[in-house]
Length: 89
Image 1 (spheres, rainbow, N blue to C red):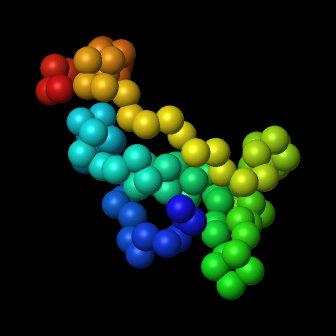
Image 2 (cartoon, rainbow, N blue to C red):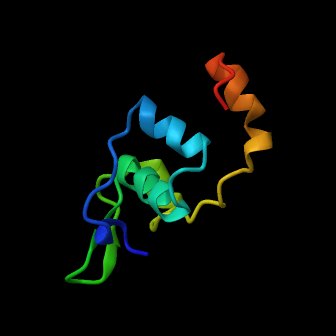
């Protein structure tokens, strides 16, 4: 799915990170958030990705954004829980 095909993405904030960890956002939305903040933009007029906003070394290796794996099941969020020092999972 092209990056900007979804009209608005949630802001990258603590609530969004929690929504990702709790698997409350679709995998497509999470992918689009990552792509957006890495600097990828989809040009629907030319039907291609623009990586001019992506860090050069990353864009050379990944000229188009990677599709990330589906979210990990809640049980495997133990690492995230320990890093965030909370038990709100």
